[in-house]
Image 1 (spheres, rainbow, N blue to C red):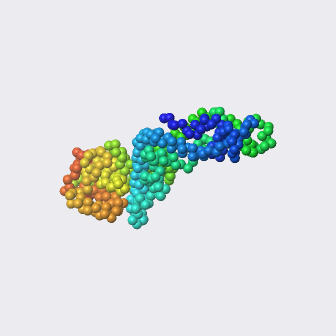
Image 2 (cartoon, one colour; image 1 turned 60 degrees about the vertical axis):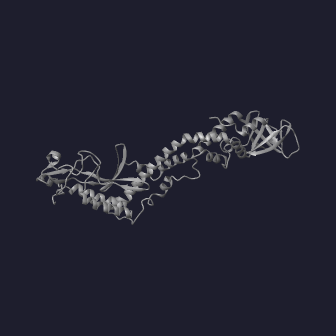
Image 3 (cartoon, rainbow, N blue to C red; image 1 turned 90 degrees about the horizontal axis):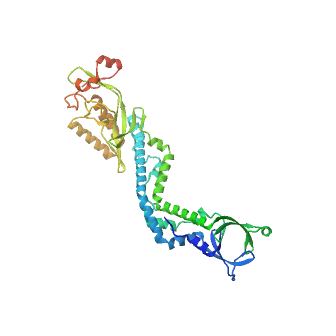
Length: 422
């Protein structure tokens, strides 16, 4: 993509001889007239005309070529908008995972482990302030999304790209060559060849590059800065991701698939191409007695969890699930993971639903999770098989032959029969 020729370069080519001193352009006029400043070189005297600052020249350059630059911005923003949206999705994903982990560890774990918990803490307020600041996705005046905003940003910057990025010292441009100039004492002036005077001040000059090379460097820098302005929103989002990776071991927290504290933990799974986040409690081995015979069936340890899902600035809570590949009379399919456990008949479910609504009204989400795990899921798993219930699978040799165990073996292994009292 070709940019219009920079105004500064056009002036330098036309004038044949010019200077940049203290970020201001001066042109050397061959005709000697009355004036305040004169340029002396090779025994010749010229008028030295003060022109614009480099910043002003750059602003004039952009204004004179406004339509061309707006077309450039338009093309750049079109190609970058999709990338920007993808980066936003990355940040939203990180934000959601951080909130879930922070909520689980800070709010739910203490409840389940019977540790002292602060009264009524909003999990969002409890987030690390630095992380929250980075995670914010508010649109602001610096998030340039259209042609006009990007052009105005370039036009009204407080510095010239030329003086900040390329011309660091005073220079002389003569016949297509660029020279660095330095002020020297008068005594030294007589001894050197490459020299000139501005009024009573003496200077030396030394070649550094030709004007074409300077033009190429300037055009490349202009294009880089224009691209940044057109894609400023994406740049900021990318910076946020980099900051997230450096703050508070954030990446190591988010990348944890499983974390445990005592009897409770969180686990991330991917089932049916969908990511799930569970808070779970670890269940020890137990045994169930058949409802019709004196047979006993042993069930191994498992993780009993509820799923947490971020939706519209709140966290939705699922129903009790056995996360591991498992078989049990109160889950529908044998040897399948992440199955919801049945916890009672119609009246029991109405009672539970009423209780859960109370938690929702009061905003007690952590308490709701604890209730589902300890008061609904765990009793259903360990002692819910009793009475005249209609289980998904009857507890018999046909369905659970591999689980069959004698009472003597259970006593020897200290495994409790958890539904025997029913």
